[in-house]
Amino acid sequence: MRGWGRPFDDPIRLADGRRLDTLHDAAMYATTLPKGVHDAPEWQAAIEALLLVAEGGGPTMFARIGIMRALNAGNVTPEPQRKQAKAYRIVS
Picture (cartoon, rainbow, N blue to C red):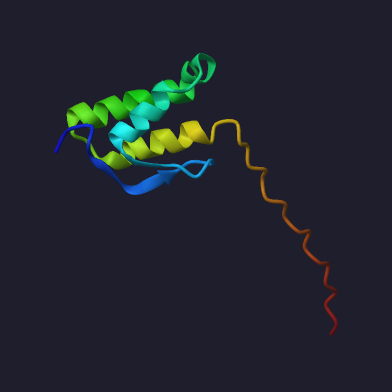
């Protein structure tokens, strides 16, 4: 199945409360981004994934992953800190 009207398996929720339900919704959102954000490599990859899925008929999950990565670009999650192991003494 091809086309811009294809829905995502799980809608993409934006920080402002809006939802991107279809490939078309995601494409319209991407076109409204400021030029500096739109030209970022993450968004260029997301837009390319949208085009490939809409026109080539691939799984919508590919486009969803691209959009999610672009939305989360710059949100660096810190590495989890590990607790130091307790020292035990063997008593015989």
